[in-house]
Each structure stands twice: as C-alpha cells, then as structure tokens.
Image (cartoon, rainbow, N blue to C red; front, side):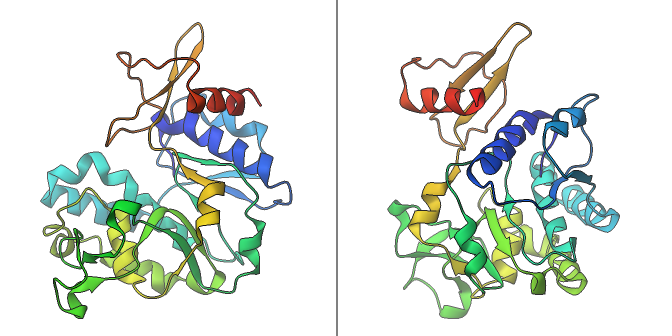
Length: 267
C-alpha cells in the first residue's frame, strides 16, 4: 500500500526485496488510490508492477467510518491493506507496508504451510502482555477473562497469507469490521491491525525472531528529497513516520543507520 508521499519508501522497499530475493519472479501489486503525475513511471524500473485501486465498497465503508469518527481521517488509507485479501488466484502473497526495508532472503517462508504468517507486535518491553479485545490496549494476561483478550497479536505491516485466505467471503467479512461499533472503543492508533487481529485471532503463525532480522520495520527513517539533492535523515522520536519532509531534523553523517540507508539507496 502506498500514497504519493510514501513513494520513496515504496521504491526502497521493492528494491531491497528484489536485491535480497533474486528467486522472486511474481507480480508486484501496489495498492493505491492515486499518485501524483509522474510517480507511477518511477516504478517502471521493476518487472511485473501493477497498480490496484481499493474496491469501491471498501472505500465506502472507510468513508462511513471516517464520517462517524473524524479522527480516523488521517489514518484512513491504512485500511487499504484489506484489499490484499481480494487478490484471488495467487498461491502465496508477501505483504509489506511501505515503511519497511528487506535485508535478507525470506524464501524459507514458502516452505511453511500455515494459512497466515506474520511478526509479533509485542516489543520486548511488553513481553507477556495481551491485547484487550475491546480497546486493543496492552494489558496483563491476568487482568481480564480469556474471552476479552487477544493473545499472540501480530503486526499487520508484514503478512504472508496463502491461497485459502484470498477469498471473496473473507474479504467481505474483513470489510464488515470497518465499523463504528468496533472502532469507537479502540484506544490505540491501530486501524487495519485491529481488523486483522480480531478476524484471524488464534489462526496466525508468529514468525521466529530470525525473520525480523530480514524484514525491518523502519518506522524512524525519513527520506527528504530536495530540488538539488537527496538527504537521508533518521528520526528516532516516537510516533514518527518515514519519508516525509522534516527540515528541522539533523543526524550525524557517521550514524550507522544513516550510513546503511545511504548504501541501500545507492545500490
């Protein structure tokens, strides 16, 4: 999923994936509701790229939710990932958010038979906690009844669904969860991640730590493009978003993350 402001990140994501996964010869599907003039042409350097607009009914449901909860408007495009489950006909999909960097070969995932695989959304500081099904906040496992908890929740930024889940019926049921009855009680910033965890609760294979080393969530890396040159900045502040202009930020050029990202862009 991408938008006009996330195009630089999407280009880096695709390039990093192809560099480390030369075995891949499948389609590259980019879900977007539109890009700025000339941006789509930037993806012509990659093979088998196609653009897909979210379904009209999906957009309508998102619109209804945003009308009821205006605070959701800035985050509405995160729901576009649900269109993933309308991509019927594939044996296996790799879904990535546009703020990710692939640093290794992930072909081993093709040997797993699980219908859905993803990475845990539990950072080390929250080990042992679960999610409150109603608010999606992290809670102690002994705080609520089992029926009120979501255990082994996953990050929707990287998912690997199989053909059995790429189904019109599942797609329709996922869309039904984009509703005020669900989101009026949510007390976190999450959007599509709420939908997926509610629907697939207990059905997901949580991937091992070694996969996390190959798929990095680079939520704090920003690409600042100017007329004369491209500057790479790293933002270590919480709740920052990648690839947006932040002119007040500064980072030392000898920073390891900065240097590594320079290498990726160059390649």
